[in-house]
Figure 1 (spheres, rainbow, N blue to C red):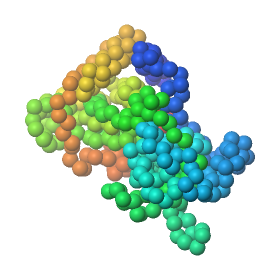
Figure 2: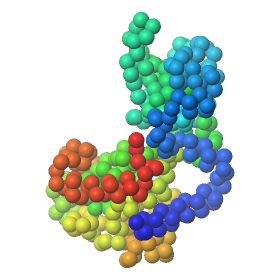
Figure 3: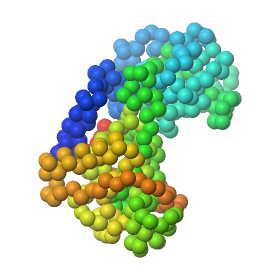
Figure 4: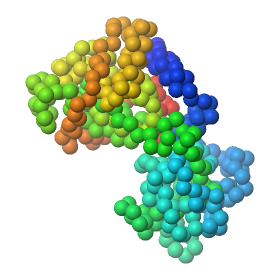
Length: 354
């Protein structure tokens, strides 16, 4: 646990220096923090809490499932670039890219920003059957979901303006389009994949191969050690929710970065510790974090994690995707992957997906 705390302090310090160097102000940082949805207890708040914290209009709509009059909402005609959050709890719900004019009198969106942000329930009120949409973090009423959307999703999230708060992209550290991708190797990709799939801000994780000299390698070829490929995961994440520094905090905690070509019983070049960067910013961040870990002697031995430019990522076969989720009862999952998940959840409670 002491080593974990050292790692967290080092990476946090690095992150704060980066923010200072970029001239971030406190207003921007505060706006970013509202997007994390870190308080998992919001669903359990008593009615007295909402009456105390919400305006009468917000309470009527969010807690009593009311509806604002059409064409009166403050966000109906908003066309600025940014994100929309739950006005009760700050949960990130939609981006401006998903908003469209449906001519129905309420703000409309064709998709939520990520799965699980919104929950649905059958609504049989008013003599009809509809699908109610609610905030996945606090349960607040947002509006209704219809299948008459004009875009390729075919959906129309019809939302009350009162249920939403808008955060302009200009006040967000990375703007509304904050997706980034990082490729990491830290032993068996089944383990690393399972951890990052449970991390807030991570939108997708794919297991695959990178760094070698064989195109479209198979799992058997990589395991032979003859391809120079590494078992890796490709992590797509939202930098407004979890930064690259956050990703690396977890990475350096759930695998041994001091072991050369070996992680536990998995031994071979394909299990080496490596960060494949896509640009100079990623390269500098990775090198800075590694240098800080070594300077502070966070481990009993030097960090040997390599930092290399990404050439090509080859997605692994389908049976290697979502391996832990599909094979929880297998011995490897219970004995090797589960302890890593437990370690992650204990050290990063605020970063575990609800």
